[in-house]
Structures are given as structure tokens and as C-alpha cells.
Image (cartoon, rainbow, N blue to C red; front, side, top):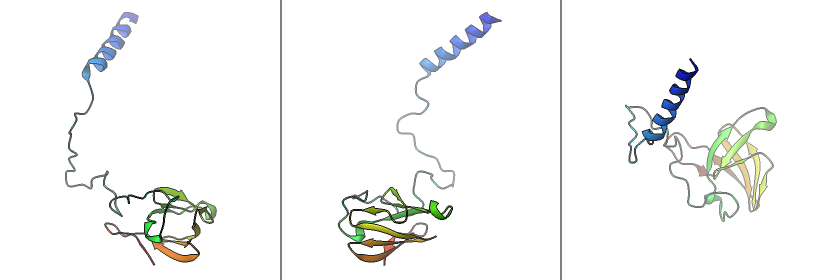
Length: 125
């Protein structure tokens, strides 16, 4: 019995070693009429200026998502960074996070960023 277990383990190790990668380069995703999980639902491409440290205008800020939890657990994703109410990053301050919008102060002026609809683009007011 011990011999069979050792032989089986050795067979598995050898098969894994010589099998090569599980996928081939250039493999195309076949959706079979389903949504491609690697394409964002909203917002399209990420802006060239990602992050929040070096933004120069409110137009550089992109609202990508909102997570609503308990009162102190509400978060938003701006330019790929997770933020919460009262966070201050450079000239940006997060004032309020709501179900579909985030109110910010940027360079002393208040702006509202709205969560884009599926296939849409975010915008500031």
C-alpha cells in the first residue's frame, strides 16, 4: 500500500513537471454570449493620471465605485484609491459619501462626483 501511494505521488509530480503551463499564450477569452469579467462595468479606461497625489483639477478625479457599509464603513474608490469621509489628500478632501455620489472639496470649492451608470462615464458637477 505504501509503495502504491509513493508511486501515485511520484506520477503526479512528474505529470505536473512535464505538462507545461495550463494556458497557451495568445489564448482568447470565449464569452459564450456572457459579459467579459475582465472589462469594467462602468467607466471604461483608467485615466493616465491615476492616484490622487498629483491631481491638478477636479476633472482628473474619477469616481470608480462606492461601498456602503455600517455608518463608519462607507468607502469610495477615486482614481483607484479607497477613501473615506474626512480623508484629506493634497488639495482634495472627502466630505460625504452617498449611495451614488461623493461630495468633495477640491482647492476650496465643493464638487459632486456621481457614480457612472453601466457603460457611462463619471462626471463632476
